[in-house]
View 1: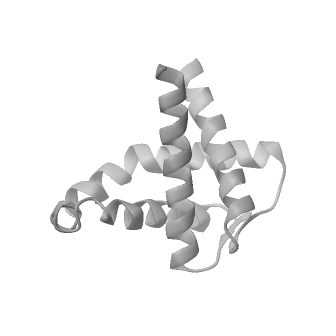
View 2: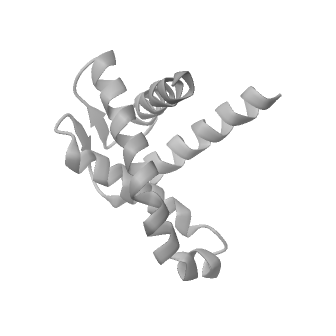
Length: 114
């Protein structure tokens, strides 16, 4: 339970970081909206992303894993479609935002295990 809440908060913090770094990603709201965004991204990553990753396995292998950036961007665009206060202007902003979220989560995992 606590790990799930921490992951939701970290996803929200990752969206805040992506909105701060990437022009074209904006959110409307405060901390509670970021937590809601973190929850939606977590649910999308839990329910939708494994199926999309499985179906695009040939492209992932062909691009040596770089297609994961496109998948992460698509998951971020899906979250923006569900949430009214999250706006992403174009595919490039989504891919860069997905990269920021993935990098942020990777750095958090490394810091937690060391």
